[in-house]
Amino acid sequence: MFDDMADLSRILRDMRKKRGAIDFDLKETTIKLDDNGMPTEIRPYDRNDATMLIESFMLIANETVASHYYWLESPFIYRTHDNPDPEKIKKLAAFISNFDLKLKVGKDDIHPKEIQRLLSSIQDTDEEVLITRLALRSMKQAKYTVDNSGHFGLAAKYYCHFTSPIRRYPDLQIHRIIKDHIRGRMKQEKLEEYDKILFDVAAQSSRLERRAEEAEREVEKLKKCQYMSKRIGNEYEGVISGVTEWGLYVELPNTVEGLVHISKLDGYYIYDEENYELKPDRGGKTYALGQTVNVIVDSVDEALRTIDFVIKD
Image (cartoon, rainbow, N blue to C red; front, top):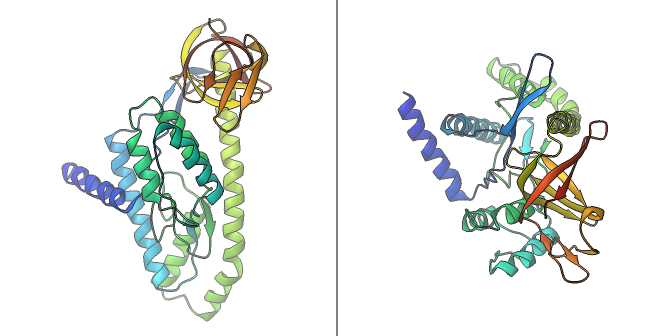
């Protein structure tokens, strides 16, 4: 049965790929804690065949349920993802032209297959991390809505959170709607009740999702700070994951990210926003997004959730 499931999972992934679904496949973090809640290991999350198998069936279940209740014209909560902002896409297209890469952009729109094609073309190249991050930043955030406008990232006409590894309130609300249909309770009074509450349910779910994600990020940053506070002075190889006017963000292979403040760089540097680079005023090294550098852990501030690196000469 598991062999059949694995075959079916691959078929489903191929179907999603053909229609243009985007898989950014960015590293998530696994943090192991001791009995006192202190981190003992930090590493990238292993997205293996079993993970992708579960994901494939979860996605097709969500699409099937969303499609069914859309055509029933039932009150419902969809998971929608709007098309990217045209200006951001134009900016991305202009930047990748420096690498002899192109995006086919319509008058006001882009098909997700173009983003997918771009990501496939840079796989295992030096600029993969750089362009993948920029493509991700050009995307809008997904949200919960009562109107179905499709899911750009999944290239799906219909999508919802009927089932997911993390139990969400929208899942529960959808289960209630399904039960009301199955048990014959979806009468005029019930329809009016859902029409009255679902807009606020969707808006609140989207708002609280943002808050939960922020809380998760803060906890993750704290644990990374606690972990790196025991490793001050250690040297690591990392990739420049962000370039700003105040310095460089460098991500280590274990997903820990720290800042090399511009004041810690030798000489005077100018921020080139268009090319995501810090350029020396005079002769020296230019630092760009996606570049590999060696850093030393300089300091950690658990209260501010910050880690500071310095470039190793």
